[in-house]
Length: 348
Image 1 (cartoon, one colour):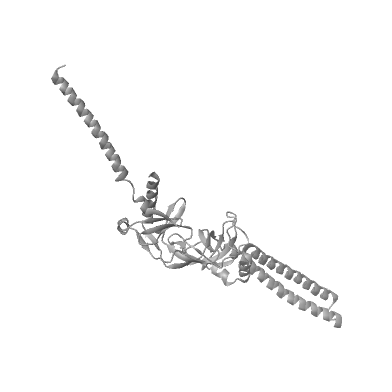
Image 2 (cartoon, rainbow, N blue to C red):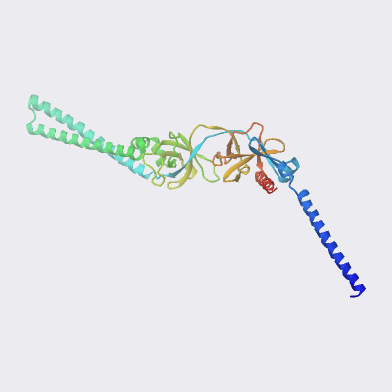
């Protein structure tokens, strides 16, 4: 091997060794940078546990960049309610029953009129027959027979009317049954399509302790409409098998027989608190949450019941600390930041 060739080989070996050394030290430097320069040191500052609750800290500049907005919400009164299901009823059976009762009343009046006349004839014939003998026994017996026959007809007419009135109460309850029998204003408003009769049924086991005097029903995107109690229903809706009630609601809402609806039956004492817009609610772990701003840069997550909706669609969140503001925009950003910070802490 020549001297020149040996020199070249030595130079190549030295260069390779230098490259390997540089790569090793360069890798160590990068690892050090990752360990020191890219370590999520802010994570422990973002989320801390205070009084058992995770508190998220975000400075004002980042709040502005993230579009986080808060609001001080006014106090409201929330009425707990049971979600029930209703159907608008056809008033035709009530009309038919009312007509049958009216006919029975007319028959009874005719029978009573005839009975009154027959009774007078019978008593006159009886007096003449006993005292003056101005009527024959045959005439007296004929008057007696007619009186007895008319009395039987009157009793039959009364029984038929009583039976129809009892059927009305059994089928529709005492209030509607009485309205049908008396053809009261409650009935006439239903027959004139001024009101609609609604049967509302609560889910099994969730009926209020007493029938609510008023309730609300609502269509999507429309204002709630009132329901006025008529009476408990004497029969259940076979599809739901819960406690059932009759209500009336104005017909100008567009509700017609056969339509179904969702109603809210008041249950329990009213609650005091605040209601937050739907945009303030986030979902995590199968639950609904809101964020409260407890200080200029601190936020805490609180669980709420998303099924407590007010009439205008807001979520009733109950009582909150006096000076706390609710995050109305950017709540999802806060949740994402909280979870990201937790993940970084775990990885560290």
